Image (cartoon, rainbow, N blue to C red; front, side):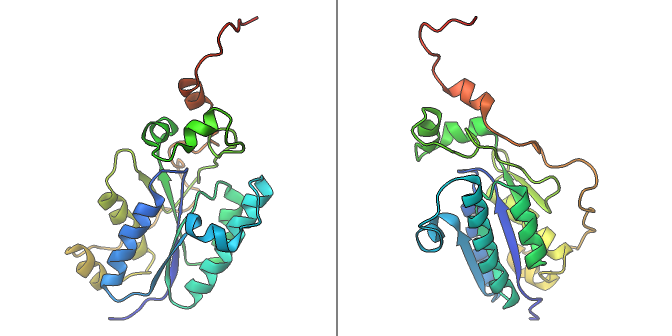
Length: 228
């Protein structure tokens, strides 16, 4: 089976949106057809690649560039690379698109209220109470992509549907073959024209998302404080 070469699927979205789950789902199926696959998960890479880095905007840009550097090396060596990282800023994601070339931006979208409700780590609760400063989506903005190749609404779509969308985009771009997807999905999928980037409406919630509304919902009201 011919190998069309490496690529990077860059899964971006807020903490807890389901990026790693989706990356693992896609990776397992690419391995079924003999592809070399690596997952670059920011939680796993952090102790090694940016242990000394803080959480300012400049620090987060540095983290995005370091992940992009590794993803580019893997992609150039025919590795199917799946990045699971909040990567909140459009500027560095676009830098990595230009650097890597064979790049599939995947926005894993989930309303902030849902993320707070289903948070098992307690990080959103701590961020809302002020225990964790500079938290993306609460006190710092998350900038959703305007025209990603793939948008997955993880609050309403199962991981299988998110995976199908990613595989369709990979086929459309020529990064996987029809035969590979026949083995993966059991169906003979057809390539479809990709929409021109920047055309039409952007992804749902494409404005920067500091979770002010979610914060108002989740935060207890200060006792005795009157509005003037």
